[in-house]
Image 1 (cartoon, rainbow, N blue to C red):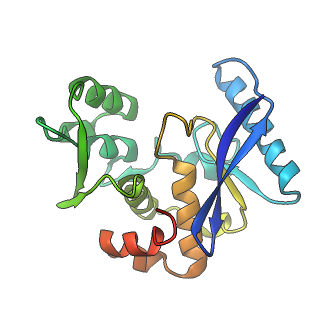
Image 2: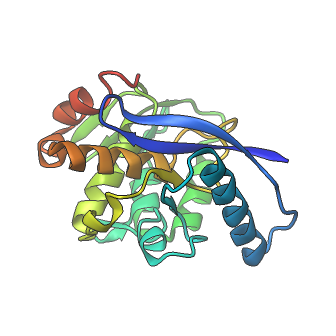
Length: 212
């Protein structure tokens, strides 16, 4: 057995988190990961019968889930994940803006290698500086802007109750595309999505008031 954090859009707190226990399938192959997605979704449906669940990653069995992966979304013509890595600011060395033009995995490895022994002190994007708190602020901001720039139609996703990311490990990772999509859906349902995307300050006040 294994556990995984999943995310629900919330009209009260923007999103909610839930730890779900599921039967884990051993193996690193793509097919094995999809089996784990299926297992996780069965566990979610056991807890929430009749609800709709979407895997948000390249491992998703649904096109909407694959399209909403951070490895597929584009921001300013570059991959979202690469822009995120390029936006990290480290003490003593600054940021590695050249990473934005790389493929996602290449960008992640590039920044990780060059930032060794340097503390992360903030983020920067489009002449805006972002602090480290709330912890997911910068990533969520980029993700929702990438949804908009990539012309993702959120209307078909409004009926989903739960969003998952089989690769996310809440014990070692902070940002999660499933959480970010849950935020987008919540704002869309409230009619606040466009207002939230006006600027980072508006986004901060609307999204994290009850989710700090």
